[in-house]
Image (tube, rainbow, N blue to C red; front, side, top):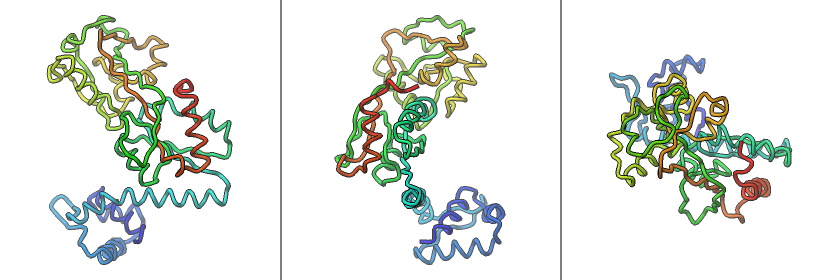
Length: 299
C-alpha cells in the first residue's frame, strides 16, 4: 500500500477538502486525486464521495480511516527501529495519561537517561484503551494505565497511584472542608479528557456515595488541564485535578485544596508491557527501573 496516498486520504477526510490538502502539500488537485484513485483500485472500494458538506468518506473509507492511523504509527515505529541500527540509539516509546506525561514522567526519564545515555524516549498522552491497543500492536513499548489490564499477552505491575484533589482559587469562599453532598452547592468545572479517568471515576464514586451527578452545578467541561487551571485562575469554579498538575500553584498559594469528607478519587497506576520473554534489553532495563523506584521518582 502506498503510504503517501494513505496520508493524503487521511488529510482529505480530516479537512473534508481535496483542494486544501493539495494546496498544503504543494501538488495539483488532479495528482492528489490520482493517488487516492490508485488506493481505491488497490483496495477495490470507493473511499470518498462529494456531499453538500464537502468531501466525505464512504463506509469503506471510514473503515480505512479507522485502521490507517494504527498502520501509520506501526510504519513510523519500524522506521525508528531501523534508524536505531545505524546510530546505536534505542528509542523507547511510552504512553500514559496526560498528567503523567506532562508533569510526572519527565523527572523519572531524566534519571533513566542519566543511567542509560544510549536510550532515547518518546512520550505520548493516550487513553487507557488506546495505550493497550498501541502496546499490542507494537506501536509503543511501555504504557501507564489507570485500570488493571486483562490480557494474557501482557504483563503489568502496580507502581503507585494518581492523587486527585479538589482545587479552588484561594480567594474562593468555599470552606476548606466539605461533605460530599455539599458538591451540589458549588459551581464546578469538569475536566473531561479521554486520557484521564477523573470524569468517569467521579460519576461512579458519587453514585456510590448516593449523590446524583446531574445535581452538581457543572458550569462547563474542559478537555485539558491548562484549560481547567485557567478557569480556577479566574475563580470560575472548583475542579478535581491531579495533584501533580497543581503542586506549584498550591506551593505559591494561588490554589487551595478543598477536603471532601470520606470521598477519595485517587486511582492506581499500572505499568504495562509485553511478557518478559518478548521484551528486548532496553525495554527490560526501563521497566525494571520503574518497578524498583515506583512513584518516588515522580516530580
